[in-house]
Amino acid sequence: MKYLVYGAGTIGTVYAYLLSRVHEVDILVKQEQVERISGGVDLTLKDLKKKSDIHEKKVFCPNCVTKIEKQYDGILVAVNRYQLRDVLPVLAIKQQNTGYFAFMQNNWDIRSEIEQYIASDKYMIAFPSSVGGGRDDKGIEAILFDEPTRLGGPCSFGIHDLQQALAQAKMNAYVDENIFDWLKVHYLQQSITAGAVLENGSFEAFAHSYGAVKKMVKAFREGIEVCRRQGVNTKKTFPANLFKLPTIIVAHTMQKMFLEQNTMEMVNNHMKKGLTEWITGYREVLADGLKNGLSMTVWKSYDTAIEEYLKLK
Image 1 (cartoon, rainbow, N blue to C red):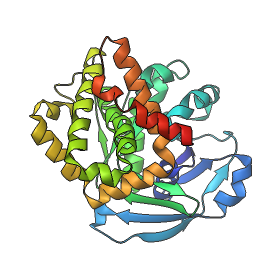
Image 2 (image 1 turned 120 degrees about the vertical axis):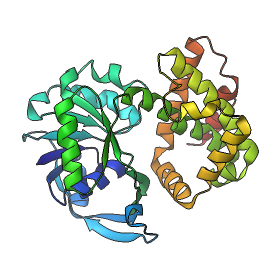
Image 3 (image 1 turned 60 degrees about the horizontal axis):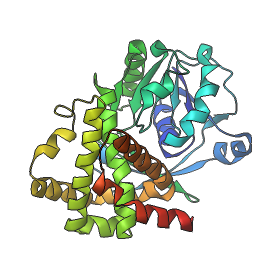
Image 4 (image 1 turned 180 degrees about the horizontal axis):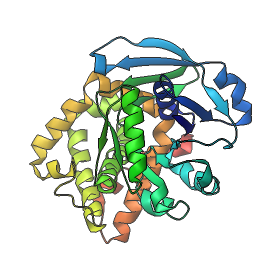
């Protein structure tokens, strides 16, 4: 099978590497990046599927292209949330070059954005739950989780094709019929973390503070109410349904998860380049909450920390 990965960040590059073990994969990059990326990207991977604590070092030399000219079975779109609006007009005129588009990102309102440009039977969601990490000047450091890539959306043949392609590359995939509801709730996790981390100075400081985690739980509940008012079935969508439990139980459960070594690694690596994307999400959820008549008191209380961070950038 032949695939194009649109986006040479952590997610796009690692998925390209994993798929390229059995499929033909190109990565779309800018012209000035071709020599550097095709010459080899340093990958440091910890594979939890193998129950490994070892960070294996590899050099991945992808096949780079600068234009969408070939025919592909699928194009995997792995750009950041705030880049999508610039990318969609480009993809719209290339629909004849692919069987489908698979969008691999956190996104608050992905369906309405995509369907302004892409036919509904031409796209699907492929949330990259199997990979987490980040990059810096030294390369990419990522964890391969024992968690399936979450597939869903209107393009059923694309879902079937990518599920098979991932299986051939020894990667699991799960088909979620309610993926758009799940994406809304999942987006809250990333978005509120921006404020919580910046208010506490680091992810470690936040994770070790029960009071900070408890506050985040309260903010998360405000976000869940935004989702509910936008039509999400929060009673059946994980993890929103867990937030009906008493605050003390939810906070202790979340703190335990935050303090896990793999969670620490993933969040700190992602924050190397991804914090701006999280802040974008924080603002989106806040704006929609206020628009829906919610006070968003706890969520909004992180504003000061976020504004101070942005002033220093």
